[in-house]
Amino acid sequence: MNRDALTLADDLVLTRMGYGAMQLAGPGAFGPVRDRAEAVRVLRTVADLGITHIDTSDYYGPVVTNELIREALHPYPEDLRIVTKVGFRRGEDGSWQLSGHNLREQVQDNLKHLGLDALDAVNLRVEGPGSLAERFGQLVELQREGLVRHLGLSNVTAEQIGEARQIAPIVFVQNLYNIVLRDDDALIDQLAADGIGFVPFFPLGGFSPVQSDVLEEVAASVGASVQQTALAWLLRRSPNILLIPGTSSVAHLRENVAAADVELPEEAMARLTALAG
Image 1 (cartoon, rainbow, N blue to C red):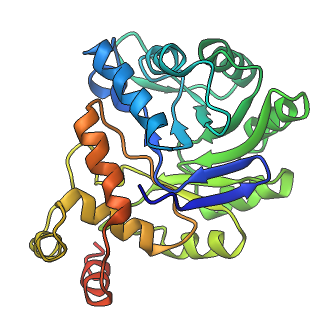
Image 2 (tube, rainbow, N blue to C red; image 1 turned 180 degrees about the vertical axis):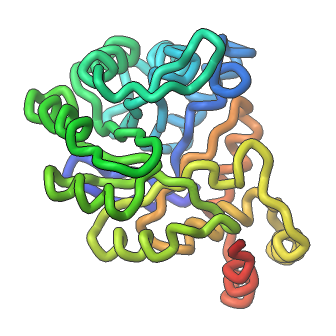
């Protein structure tokens, strides 16, 4: 595996190819794990491959992915960093419900289910425009108490990022972005200039991979799958991009990780970059 890593703080060094645990829970990240033994194998393979960045949340399942991570990996490898999210909860029907007023409880639940004394990094998940100062301020207070080491934001606008940075430093932003959905192009470049990481969620376009004739042609020319090629483009797009593709299969995990070694010539990059929707 390409061990390319991004240093966001002295104690936060993340491999640019990470792992997203969302798919370890049931369909739509809700309900029990489908194959517990395979899920544990996936997580242990993540560690064996030298990946130091696992993305999770207590609202995946809920609780399912965090308990799996603890079962599979605790006590954790010294260099492993677990990044979680707060700001939502799950309804009994699996619905996603904004929950920005009990963030202390959400952080404490993540700590308990992961078996940690402090969380390496926490993203505040936001839904829609408007001020996030009150919610972000809650996380800043938890950081001051030592329960959270680093702060990030998810699903936010440039204006919300600016507002948060007036309150406290952030280490990364997690937004929707992939080879065809490119609204955050300018934002990624600005964050890179400021030394802030960018983590695309749905890097393959959602639960099914992005598709186009050009992508298929380029993938064939470099001897990679369509999914690997799309991930490789993201890694080359900007040095501050960190990937967290998810899977519940060891074979698929290895395929995703191999994308870090796919070489994209300049002509291939140009053709893929032109796919922006």
